[in-house]
Image 1: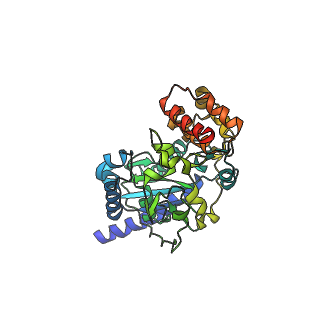
Image 2: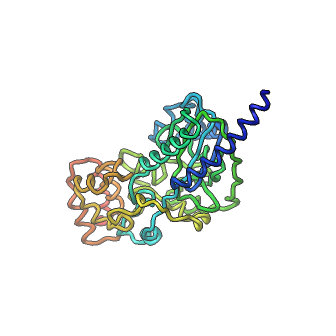
Image 3: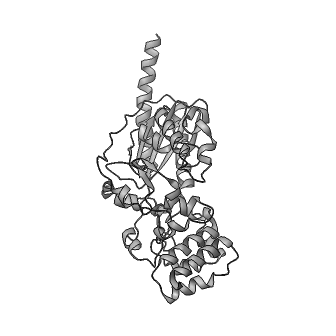
Length: 357
């Protein structure tokens, strides 16, 4: 009798999983997977990474303890995790061309449009509601880069891809330009098999990193990572790293640009991720001239908004310090020499020294 009930539940689980994938596709997700909650290996790797101090000022990486790697501690009753992938690469000016032009601002491709958090979370919630319409109310919680969740480990465990040497999730069919989201659930869903990794002996991401932040395969020292320096770090960017930042003013895509698998990256169909305000090739001088009101108006709803105007100017000042010397660049920096923020003044002074000695 018990065995019969288990078999019936298994059949329902397989059918439900197939429907969840279909509903996910209808909602615009590019892939859906199913994982269990066994993250012992990922937990040990995270503990070692934290012990090495590679998280820098990101204290939140440690503050939640084992809840990050034990889903049932974060959301009691969790037995399965539904993972989702959504491509974000928009039609935009080629990043390689922007990086080669030191007068322009290089902004990570994921941040060129609207902030993905609300869109992805709302879509995951719609998926959960569709599941509830089929199964009845069930325990769940949706996440997208918004809580102590080991997203890459769960996505890898659910068969959405493998963890590349740059620590991002990779797939053979779509590279790495995508967002991840999760639904923690108490539904006993059938699990997907993890994919084999396909990085082999390739070192492209390690070798191309401007600051050599990928200190070993699968290990990033965030304290050297340009994404951390321009987004997470609240204070001054270390002087020795400033010349290496180049014109990257929000995030860094170099490891993705170098990855051979991103030859297969797919453009997004989401209009919300389309480029706003010409950010895919804007002039450093023009962006540096924005007032705080213009920053807040133009970047409302953007991922960039959360770093605030002060750090935006800090990052742009470094970009201008690394830009080819011109009267426009020097004039832009001179205009901010006496800025009210000591942080901005410090980076402007450094940039002016680069041009004027």
